[in-house]
Image (cartoon, rainbow, N blue to C red):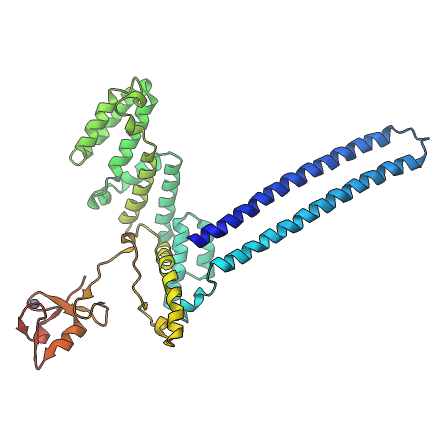
Length: 390
Ligand SMILES: [Zn+2]
């Protein structure tokens, strides 16, 4: 983060110099243009019998001025160029350019993996609403993406854009269409949208009071789960005439309502469509940003100890990377005996007594044809242990 701030500081300096330079040359050019125009009118006003020498003197003087301004501008441009090239040096100084060495080579040995990666990039752009970029990537990577696959992304994006423009209608229509799926997922999206629509109607004031009363019937469907909030909204109705801003219900006008509805829509619409709330590419990138500094830091240690190859292991990193809770997508189990996370090749095994250890630990504990649980003294047959799936 510090590296980014350092670079940003230098970039800001150059940008300030750029705008300064722009201001300078614009005013100098304007001055030259004004002078040229006055010179032109002066020349036109000169009587034709005037000796030619006078014309020449005026032009030579103007030429000199142009030269001086040109030289000045060229000198400040040179200085500007120096500042721009200094940014490159700042980047080199603050960032490790050689992060490729911590990436196992070859990066994508399996064509199937490459296809999945391209699909994740493509999906990311569809989610961002960058349809043209996504279509181009899909064509170049020869991904077989049909309209069926694209449609949910396009639709979600269109509704989100409307919500950002404070238009609730497309979102209300989407929520109505997917009402049963939203209820199944325990989503409050439908209620929140109607709530916001009701508040927006109340905001109109006296003229829309009847409209708000009629709209409040929509809350019947949500009476069971949201009774308290509905009571508050009905209370606010009493203040529609005098305006909500000066009422005890002024908190309902909070601008954050819109940010909240956008976030809830993005999350719940993805859940209904069976998609993760964040794009897989963004999730991987965020995890990579957290992991990279630690990996680069141990790179030199690995090289010093001449144990290269540690970073080339396919499924495992040489150190634990602690990602935030939002980056955890599934349960993990660490074997209490080997103190290692279980894997496909060393899965968790449930013993007859109910204690769970990894398969490798189980094999190590076998004496003769029996195994004794390390946590309780139950002695049992190793083959009675069962694999556990999280
Ligand atoms: Zn036990």
